[in-house]
Length: 426
Image (tube, helix red, strand yellow):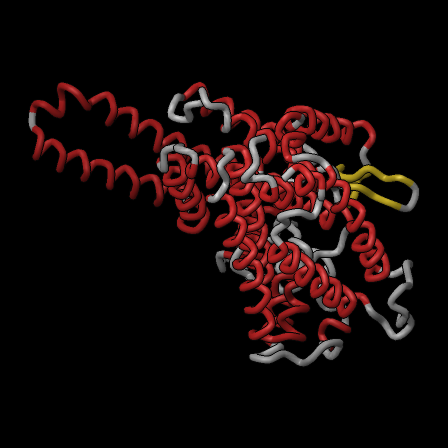
């Protein structure tokens, strides 16, 4: 038994490792397709995007060995330290970070850049797992919910201030984890309702939405009075008043935020997405070209390295955030579906293994990993096919970038290490 524990590869879930290898390998093939030119034909040309990516992939191997080297108890014991260090990294970006595309999200070391936000997700997941796995921790208490929200949204706020709102959105994925651990579903319902009201306010206008909501509340109150009579007034009038006030303030705040705090290019993205305006040359160019690229692939695709739109560089950032458009053109609906199925298999496997954990820390961390991957995949693909606005979220294991690849590698293989020791007494 002890000899097995000292073997870092003992009881590793090789199916997850296989899925990781397949996704990374196929991801590199599409980066190669999106970056290759007639002048760059050597695979190991490290001046190219695909050459740099293969270097990051090779360097991921010792990183994985290091992650597996440490005992599972190590990640639980030092989770708070990892989390605090990650917050310090985010804070240091403000005085020392390099600004790229309007956001101070990178540390630059010579010719290499590092994006801390890609690593913070894993360390936040560890911190959340540590907090919720405490035997005395009751998520039903409001004070404990606040503690969890502080841990989750502190890095999100720091990332938003860079500003990188797209990366900050990922932290909403932790609500799935909190819900699994006993948080009332009301938070997710209220969040969904808030999104619906926000979009409706943009689409129909402030006055129309406000009048509609207040009318619906009035109808509901009238029905309650009809059924409850005097009892209703005795116990619920203040709740009704509060509902009217909160609804009016929220709609008003949404309108104020959208028109006065959002920048014009943010408003343009929402209006193009909702069909309120047509702009295929400026703000809507990326999404329009991406949709054309994917649809041109048909059912089976044009074939590897045969995507003429990809070769023409019509889709900006096609090797990073829009890498799925390359998949759609060269591998078609069939290839795109296989990629989605592979992600679904990975997430299902993580959730399945998480439910077999005797240790609560491992289960919560596993759900965090699955939720983060789910959110990334849904938002990135939704963005590329035009269902969601452009927010700059990479597709896990596919999008070009060492920080993204290493961030997801750390996130996944910490879980693989925790899973390998799940039957042991930590």
